[in-house]
Length: 148
Image (tube, rainbow, N blue to C red; front, top):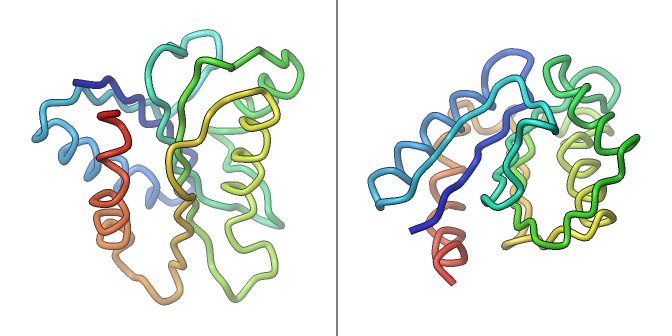
């Protein structure tokens, strides 16, 4: 089975709730799931699958707990050719920066050579009051990709 590192970027806790729920689903299927709410690039294992769950804050910005991680990727420019990842973005479609943080981290990881597993999920919290439900539907389609 696979080891998945769930990396959250959250301001109000929604990304953490989604990560907790998906970690339970992964564990139930025999995978090892590790959640980090204060991601630091130097401490993350690039031999795991990264599942990034990130909300958008302010004018398309990363949440405070995620900024140092994103900045480290930008400044250090690590080669991530062996890394596999997926992204779930949370945002409000009433703003023109809807899920901008998820889109930015996805683009950054692809630029560094990482391989994306499946499509990014963008959850609109203005119409989905329980984002875990949308994430679970996405997870059912995504989880076979981590077994390949």
